[in-house]
Image (cartoon, rainbow, N blue to C red; front, side):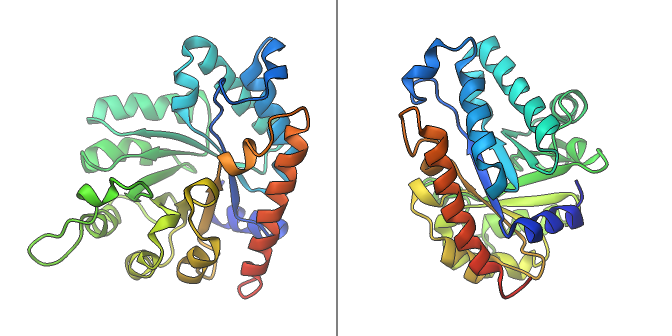
Length: 274
């Protein structure tokens, strides 16, 4: 999926919502535990309920890998289900990979050759040769960690060099030599507020993947005020506030209601650019 196709889907649905599939076997409704594959049963119901209101899904690999082979099978089934039934959805493997070149090559092969996923999150700490193998795939996206929403982001990401450039700004600036706004996005946490102004000075045209609204307390209005560009430029993720909004047999119905609420807020924000 290229940048224009992604933007067209945003315009059509009046939404830039990504539903995070952070599926925890200990949090899903108990009645699903009798299913042969509870994780996939939960994901399938959530996807069917929320697909009209979102443009992307982001399964977090940690939640699947924690269950060993069973979890990985559920992850693969989830990916194939989205691709078959909702091919307009942008799929993000939230894996935060990044290692020496030959290892990154294997990670890229796993997500892009084997699973044919649209994008994968990548950590930039080891530099260009740890990221470039992911950028070798035509039509695929790298989503590079830049400024995250967790408290510990201040430990490294906001540190300044002698010239006053913060580490996240260096990541944004240098990484543009590796990719461009047609194959690279950046993770920027919703809790960073006006930092989006500084980010847009460096990467005005790139898409930003924004976790942190909902359960983490980030403000959609503030993110849009400082982060929107002429092509939207935002994919805003919500996980727990949607998928765990209800724990009864009506969980999918309630998830749909929550996703629709966010979509309607996004439609308001998009009025000025669509």
